[in-house]
Length: 417
Image (cartoon, rainbow, N blue to C red):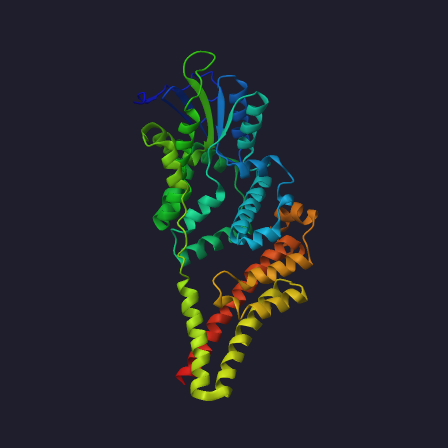
């Protein structure tokens, strides 16, 4: 039977976190000090470093996963990315979303003269320098995105993707006063609450669900932790965003489930249906239309339907690739692939043309290093080879999608007429 859970008293006035938003929860032989921070606040960085330097903690946990920690601590992490592998594994959307968010955060950080997530980076590095165990408690970004997107409709996924991309080109500044309010948690929590009214599924996955996940990871890290050398319970500092502070503390106090089972539940991603119904229906319609055309109108009508489909999808896919500044061979690949890939569940015309583009115009080390800066300007998207490959993927896919609707409507009109 687990030990009773208590809320320990707040820190004394002279303690390094006395004036910082924090909560303390003690359970099962561990005293968790949850420090709420703003991810773009210099005072948050100073508070984290002061807390670790005080010697009052035996271990440190941070709101990071292994991938995000690497990106924060390794300046060459992005340059080591295999873009062709990303395209082949169908992770282009995830890569683009991460890039968009990173670019937005970097622009915001430049306004405030502090690196995004600097307090999390400081917590991990300072703890390691002092020989303290470091626990990464956040869920991997890809899992969070997948679980969020699978709860949204097609229109919801489209809106959130458009919102992320639009945020990259926003130019409004965020003042220091507003950042400090965010650190206190009031504005941040109220804005999340308002957002949840329109997107409760997204709020549940991105915020509330991660509160539960991180609380479980903290409990897991606390199992078997040795008592503090200073006497008393093991003392763990957890550095998390202010928006997670209240929910994380609540779950840490109240949750009783087995950590391994809870983590398995929160990391599960429902597999897509093994039967690609949309592709089956589209293929049946297109091939059935061709067959009907040959049967009712002979070679002339059947051939005309095939030509209209090829031209509608191929030309519009190629135009999308051309607008993205694709290589002539990439444009040719888009034209050839666009009539065929809509009829195949595992292929996309954008992937084909982007792979050709990335092979013929292989991004350089300099392209990867300049990527986050280049995507903040419209011109930079065409200048940077990595960004241009992404444009190629999206615009070719968009052109093909428009071509499918256009070609399908023409075919339907021809058959009905």
